[in-house]
Each structure stands twice: as structure tokens, then as C-alpha cells.
Amino acid sequence: MNKTGVKICGLQSVEVLKSMVNLPVDYIGFVFADSKRRIDGAQAGELLRVLDEWTPGSRPRSVGVFVNPDDALLNDVMEKATLDVIQLHGQESPQRCREIREHFGVQVFKAWSVDSKGQTVKGETERLTDELDAYVGTIDALLLDTYDPLYGGGSGKTFAWDRIPAYQAWTQQHGIPLFVAGGLTADNAEKLVTEYHPAGLDVSSGVETDGVKDIAKITAFVERVKQA
Image (cartoon, rainbow, N blue to C red; front, side, top):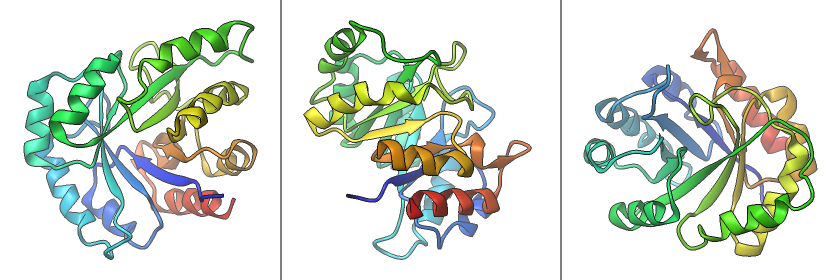
């Protein structure tokens, strides 16, 4: 079984990124949507230059997080920071995902909000499949995040993980990696990996102290995931 990938999201600091250079991190995420972690294209370009200092072959892939972005924003960011992945957290249609993927020649990850209530109810799986089927061939990964009415994600709260298998069945059927976000920390990451084996975990607030990325927490999170 492949090792679960790690995505550290919401990076803003060159110093923090430099301190991560020896960690086996697979993705680094930059936020271009309304958030206290938001940066602009110029800042992202500076951070990407730090990624180039990684040992060849171990460089994390760069991910830009957007919510319903228009072409002007995407063009501005991509001109200043050539991202590897565009992660869409809004109500982007399959057609919009395809347009972005083809125009910029990047992978597209689609975030999918999951409410925090319990188990999947009868009939929900069929409805879910109908909604997701339209995205086949337009996205490169599906990312489950806790529903947040304000931002769509990034709430720092977990959703009911017993909802994961319904989505996992769909992603496995179509060969699409499944990432999980929402309230992850070094303390709960191991349980998630061992019970559900997602392709990747996406963490932001769970590796922060007082709203700032904490290298000790990042290191602990990465170690727990990779050991699991």
C-alpha cells in the first residue's frame, strides 16, 4: 500500500518553509481565497523559489487554493507563481474544472464539503454518485473537507469520518486519489490513516500555534502520518 501523502496548507512564511526542507512533505498549499492565510501571486512566487532549494526528487508540489476564482485572479497568480496544482473550494462546475485544467496545464483538485453529521443515510450514496460522476475526467483528486457556511472549508473542525467510505468507493472506482482535510492534528492523523487509508491528508490550523505555522507541530504531524 502506498504511503499517505501530506499536504501542509496555508504557508505564508519563507522562514517556516526553509525550516521544512528536510521533511518528507508531498504538497505545499498557498491560499488565494478569503482567509487570514491569504497571500498574493508575488508572495507565492517568493515561496516557490524556496521550494526549488529542496533536494531534486523530494521537492513538494505547489498547490494554490481558490474559491470560485475568475480568470483575472488565476492569470495574475499563475504569471507570478507557476503552481503545479489548482485546488478549487467553491461551487466550481465540472466544466469550469476542465477549463482551468486545460488552460493552465495543471492538475485540479476539487474540494467537497461534508457536513459534520453522522453516517451516510440511505439513498445519499446514489445522489452523491450522480453529483460526482459529472467530475470524472475533469479533476485529478477529490478532497473532503468539513462544511463551513462562511468559507466552504478551512473550519479547523473534523467531519464524521464514517462518511469517508461512500466517497472512497467512488474515487477507487474512477482511479481518483482521495484526500481528507478538516480538523486534522498529529493526535488524530494516525487513526485516520490506519482506518481509512486516504491518498493524502491536508492540514493547516492543526499545525499552528496562535495562528502561526509551528515547525514542531508540522514535524510531528508528518512523522505520525508517514509512520502510520
